[in-house]
Image 1: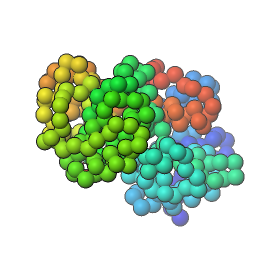
Image 2: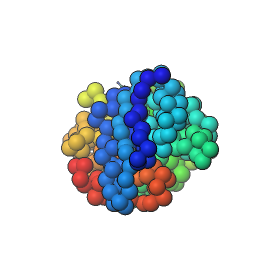
Image 3: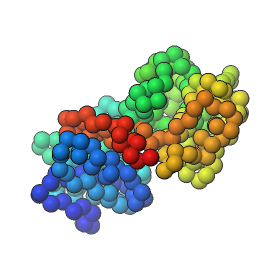
Length: 280
Ligand code: ATR
């Protein structure tokens, strides 16, 4: 077995597991939350290559780890590797956190959707009830967002994706939760939208989704689930250039999903605004 973790008995051990992992802000975020309550913990970022997740999880459990966050590319593997799954993890088909139960059982959960909703509603003060929402992309990130957005009661959620069949699959899977339909970029229907969420991986390669600018108006808020150090992404730059009301990247979502995990692990609600500000 490889030796991924550096667990010592002096402090409870937490980590985030992914690849790449060098740029993860999770250790900084969790240490900042812990400092708010005088909690001492160790929180490391651990690189685990694709296909090695379940082996790493076994080591984590055997060595006495407390809980972990999980990021790309392991969220689906994390979901599949555990003993127990939360309802939120079931809906997303993926886990971004694994906790250990009293008897050492592994429990998968997913706080990404809650983090997104909290950032949109509490931090950005957007009204989702009755709003028209356009979601770009139908991969893992989009799948986590759809059920969370639908439970906020939008009047319409349209999922648009390059590969139409994946958008259709999402719309069918979650149709019982609210008014959701699939569309192609070339035939989305009437615009503009109140909120456009980019859940594609295009910002990573410096590209923008092939969206007609007519879907963005002076009343449209644009959100990129990806985050950058200065809050700018290619998609948000494009939205600004075509007249969006406002733009935000996914840094707030990142901090809020961490806060949700922290509150489950430590039983305390951390202040997130100060942490978001200090990361900027
Ligand atoms: P993640 O887990 O980050 O969501 P993913 O599951 O690989 O990553 O999904 C990537 C999303 O970006 C998909 O919706 C993908 O569209 P396809 O399903 O058609 O692949 C979208 N995407 C990636 N490259 C794209 C491109 N050049 N144009 C439009 N959409 C793109």
